Length: 307
Image (tube, rainbow, N blue to C red):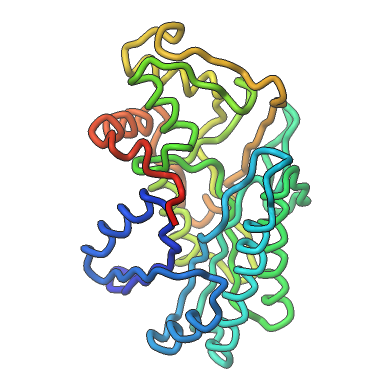
């Protein structure tokens, strides 16, 4: 795949996505198109023009956080958008599914939450999404799986844990903590500090997707998880330590009283059997994030919608 030409479709509605698009446009064998995955005519035109033989479907509308927010936009994008891509790909690839590949990037959130002490989720565990966003991702999964079962469509699904890394939008947890730590300003946690996550370095995540594309099987699901489980307090403490600032001075933690303790953890045994394992520790990953955000401060406020 080193000689593959990569085509990206993105709505480019945030400043950080536009900045990334400028960087991507300068790369060899990489083309970016501004468009919406729900635009069926655009997808048919692109498939006809470029004869794609692989689709990696990352596109989704992020979760909402309050009851008053309208979930229709991400339900439309995550479910209807996925259905549109599946329909177009299935028609364009008809008769040559063995030479094509469709990877749907889902989320750990489709499993719901784990009790403390329970074993990590495996790919065969039932889906029990605990918010509308996760339900929309689970619905899209089922749609992709149905195409495989009904038509032999070459579907593969990956469920990553919480991904982080340089250039992540400023509204995400780790960039926010780094920003507030550098500025010594208060930060509000929107989840309980004891919430546990497997933080997954972005390059480890990409290697996981690549491993599935090379060694995985159609119709299968693969978890992609980080090294260990860490609480929000662990992450904040490590960032403050690397910034050489006492926690009490660098960041004031204001716990969201409505937040509930959550735990999410994935078993990665199935993917490890294909030769993958996470390489970057949380300490190393956070160090690289701090270095990047320190030298790219203009990125901090670039993640809001502008169109």
